[in-house]
Length: 193
Image (cartoon, rainbow, N blue to C red; front, side, top):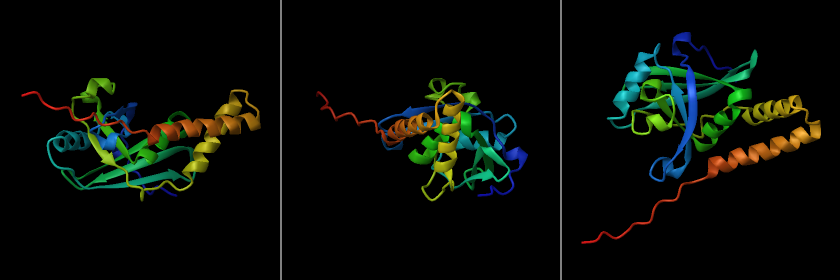
């Protein structure tokens, strides 16, 4: 699927990542976090700061990849409010394929500006937003792209073709297990009078 034209000023660097699982956030799902450098994209930074104090805004989500570049996939978010802006994120399939798979399967991602912390833990109580990635925002061929990348990686580490395929199957099962996990809600405790 062609990604259309991504303007360079819309490409926001990902400088770190992680995940947050909390019983009261995102239905208890383990949600990936992208730590992004908004230095050259102040509108995205403003959106995150404003959004943390206002109701959710409108966002259009689009996945894509270039027909000439099989090593990268892109996520483009176009926000209508509270600040109208667009941001695109580039993922290296070999290095960040698990992150992409988790975003696709949990149907969400946190955006944490670098000013809120260089690590997820540093930004726990600082401004960040969660963006829903609807199931309708698909990346055609993702399963095949990711599997081929994993097999290729295992082959580079000396696995036979059959071993690489089996390791890929196990790898995907573990990633999918993470994306299906839910944090249990704490039981309501009676309050002493």
